[in-house]
Image (cartoon, rainbow, N blue to C red; front, side, top):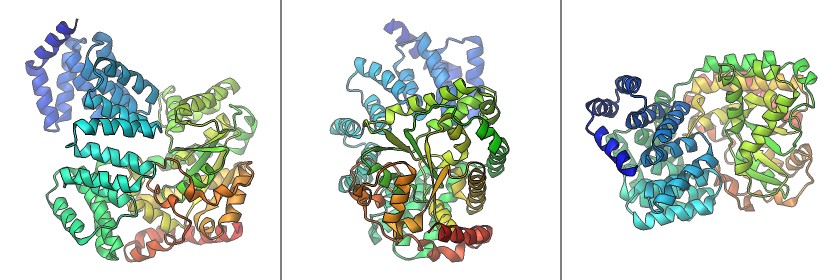
Length: 541
């Protein structure tokens, strides 16, 4: 059977149609490649090489469910097709189907225990599942045999950073750069620690690398890193220029439709009325375990997460995509993945219970302790508060707020590894912030008291009072460890990982003022919101 498979794959390497498709993919002509591969599969639906190539193509453009299906079809025909199984595992990882990915990887490793590509994917899956010691051990195992892999050293640095081994992570990033000096993501990873300051020599190397970099990913990462370097040097004009260039490059590869977001949030307000929520009160899964921390990225949500995770009854996890996946699955069942609201309101009590249980089942892989409560810190879950109320009525929801200008600019100068498409344009950020506040206002009106609001500036200046209020909302007794949150040892998987390992400080509150000359358009959009923010914060004090 293996010999027959090898013969088929060897023949595919000489197939003129597949060669033409591969050349088209190489030059970026994905439309031509897709047409060639689909034509081939119409005449031979069992062509496993064409199935794999088409899977790689659609994965490249983000059609992950299609890619998963294509790789699965190839494996159904040829279970021993190792390359397709590795592709399949990688797609399952990207879709956050971690347990399923590990099953496929273990099948591969049973056949070849030392295969470096498989071990590397497994390390990434384990890291995403929160199994950092095991992930780091696998990275070390591969690097012991292949020490010249710059990107692998960078991945190792990411894992070390997350568990708080900052010096080791810096060393890993520097090792990556010694191998690949133009590796933009490694430079940005150093900058993103927020504690590393670049010297003049580093800046010169980055400027030269940015000037010659061909890959967009290297260019944009280098510009973000240079933005941070010049910010630390108090050269705010050059800093803003580099942040803006990085954001422009990122936005070009991740376009954002603000009107679509606004329409969805408006539909949410029309659907999730006081009456719609009241008539379904008490339905859904009654488990009180989840604590949702929502808001905008860079609003102080990681700080709130770290404070709560310092409590003996609360487990910190990460920004979980599971609620959004439940919503998309519900919407897809009705033919509209981005609009699940009608199907949600049509669901009966049993269906709402099942959806809540599905969320809990999906997130179980992230649970590492027997603590009764856990945190889901995905910021965009604010879009799904109605869903949370209906399927998990006893879950707690915390909204983190920060001065609108400070919050939006902090998001603008941050390169996010995934998502947050709205953050790469000041205009998009301003509109998104207004839409977010309007939706939160709606829920404050229709389910008063269901959402607890934390104001970042108040938290860092009146910590004990605010922490006591936060814990009381969650139904938790006060514990002094929450005041010493920076001493809590746990993985932190956001851009604020090193900041929340330090005591509270106010340095970040007015940081955005240095960039005010370039933020006039954002200031104009948010002017009324800023006035209201100050009033709301005073009222909560």
